[in-house]
Amino acid sequence: MNLHGRTRRYAVRPFALALVLSVIGICVAKEWQGLGRLHFLGYDYAFFYNAFLHVLAGQADWSHLYNPASERAFLMAHGYPMDPHNHYVYPPQFAWMFAWLGLFPFGLSLALWRMLSMTAGMFGVYWTMKTLWPRIGRGHLLLAVAATLTLTPFQLDIAVGNVNTILFALLALAFYAIHRLDKPTVGALALAAAAAIKVTPLALLVAFAIQRRWNVVARSLSILALGLAASFLFLGWESTAAYAAHFLQFGKQSMANGPAPYNQSLLGVLELLWSKGRGGSTPTWLSLLFDAYALALAFVIGAAMRRKPWTPESIRIGLSALLPVAVSPLVEQPHMVLTLPALMASFHLIRRHPVASARRTYAVLLATAYGLQTLPATFLVNHLTRWVPSLYWLHIQMFVSFACILTALLMMARRHASRPAARTATAA
Image (tube, rainbow, N blue to C red; front, side, top):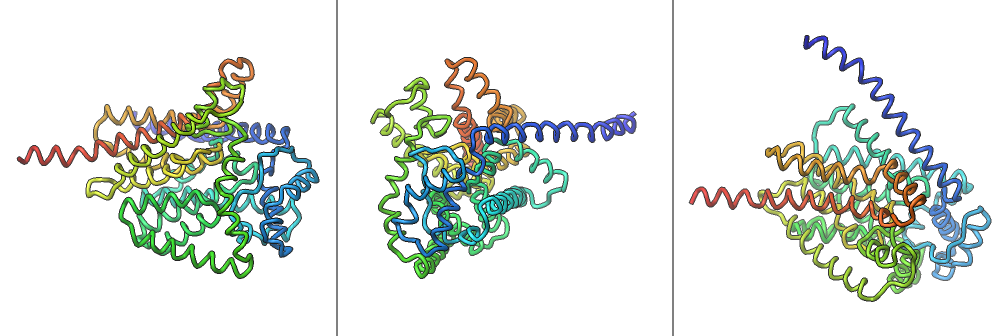
């Protein structure tokens, strides 16, 4: 009987796998077709490529590298929509590191960038799994990759040509090198490279400082300083100084694109609920409320992931990955790629949780978080809000996903922290 049941199970697996792959393929095709109709395929990469061309031409100064007129001219030449709030907002070092892609025609360069991003994403999934599970089967790895392919942030990041998937891979490599291989220098190299591409990953250094990983923090800052000094030989220091001076202005300009679904931070969600989907200016009190929220959340996350003997590495990895998203006032949907390590760390912890009732609660939170990030959920929300505009508030699904992951990790961290206290009381 057991042999018969096992045979039937093996016979069903290929059909189930084929069905899953078909659904993924249909969802991915639909997502890319929709972005194509809106002329957004490669949209973000157009800003990158224009910056690459300036670096290759020796025009790395502020007036050329961050010239809005040059960006608009390039976008118009390639048929992209115009938006006064979108622009190149990354450090000059990012354009310097990837300027070689400007040697190719735009179409070929975009294809190479997507191949690089896809490869980075697959390695990011692999490194994250190797950090959490020292031994992983090929089938489990393929399943994790397939699950990643269904995520809207991942597909959107690849389609528009943004850099978040590469950042995810660098952060995954840092976690793998530090937590599994015990090679802090390799981890520091990955963190420094991520910070040179985008400022947001610097929040990871705060996370490692909270955990008293001072060797990682010191080496990351040293490598980053050396990298900046090396870039000055080619870029000069003026553009970097000007970028630092205009950093907050860049953020305000980007946030002028509006609330959720563009901005999935708490600030974007509050703006959406306040304006009821009609747009408009943001009240000052909303910004102050978010600032208080970000400080409080950073304190809570920091307290939960402090290095204690009973705090699992998985909890620290998950909370560290969430920190940049938690404190940022601007969280675009592609930025949610950075929550992948936290999703996988939560899954790892839930599978090993000893209490069945708590395990079910965490599993519901994790399933909700994952489901809200998938392409079918995005399609459903988009269609519902198009048919019934009063359901505009459904566009906060990415923030709800983040909140579910964070809640699950904080609950598990609190449960682990209470165990030593319980054992001490029993011994007394």
